[in-house]
Length: 274
Image (cartoon, rainbow, N blue to C red; front, side, top):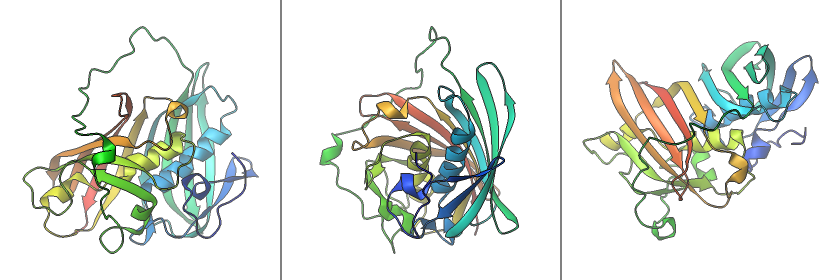
């Protein structure tokens, strides 16, 4: 990782989430134009940037990201932003970090991360059933999820849906398909956060027209080493929204390799704005 900040516009996710140390647990970043979902940058980019800052602050490289939780409390606009990182505790093998992103005097996003060394492996395994991925991804046509049919940031990703399209008026809140960055980059924890957040909300499958929604809470567990993944190969995404109450939807998300390896799990809370 370099300490060069992103230019005003870039299609490179790693560069778009770049940070530069400013001393005393502070970092600066430039939120590039073109990654918006509505007014602000999409959540995967914001939380990926916070994850990158916490990983940079951790002095031991073998303490990798295991879990991240975060909230985006206001739109993060293109332009300069400040990040503050603090170690809540560094134990013998596990570190707990917290980070805040601000523009001007306003805090707009917060995240905490668990970074830990590899430990015992005698219980390794995945009890969650792998999804039915259907035909080889090369036989699935890319979806035209681009402005004006989708948010601006969607043009940075390639989507090959195998489930319901958004606004199809279906009877279940589900989404599935292949996803990858249009511009391949070496995959790390920030890039996986972005890939997990790229797909549309599962509740869109039941809608007949676009409806404004926003993520207000985000939790991710990283279960595979991103460095072992082929950055040119898509990951398979599966998402569902098992419950909605009073305008808040709980969504469960998964990322898998084509070989059936579980890469990450994610739970989000969406607010249905209207």
